[in-house]
Image 1: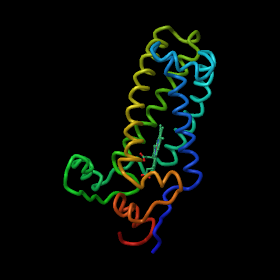
Image 2: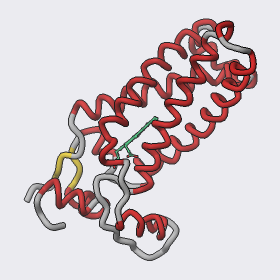
Image 3: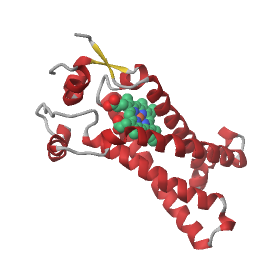
Image 4: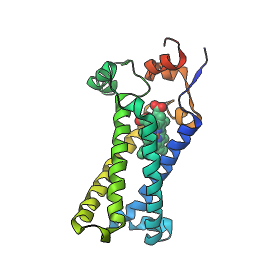
Length: 205
Ligand code: HEM
């Protein structure tokens, strides 16, 4: 029995880090556009004009890479079974003092909902971003509505990503190895994703 098991291929990891890099570039270049309070962030890009250009380029990269990542994961994240229902009922055990065990597949329901939310947010941010990009081509009310939705989705997405980063690092030690090296410890897999471990290794956890 090996101590490690492959969770993500190199291609899957590169894709995830392209999504992450473009996301944080969008965040930094967009802060000054979101509110005057953050205008200081423009200096990171050598001025507002450059920040807008970087925001547009990063937006295109994020839009396509994020949707592609969802399409690649869609089978693992879009179905919920009886074990997922138990996880949701007990909120993944996060609010309980008792050690909780769930027979979870490749992703738990929280991860699945996160992936679905990110795909929906990507579409909404992309479409509203397009209206804002070329404001003279569309009626004024569409552009103004887009500005509002774009800003709200931005805040929501940042909140979800903060939780994601916490759970993927400090919150669940060992998880980050999946995205850094591709392999995770068998102990980690048996504990967090026993159903997936059984399928991937052919061994009973
Ligand atoms: C420094 C930032 C980030 C870190 C450390 C991080 C880490 C991780 C890790 C370790 C996994 C694998 C989880 C597992 O194997 O169970 C993962 C999966 C994933 N990440 Fe990230 N991530 C980051 C940023 C992002 C961003 C910005 C997005 C999208 C906007 C994102 C979207 C996803 C999705 C959709 C998955 C698959 C489903 C899930 O695990 O929730 N990640 N991430």
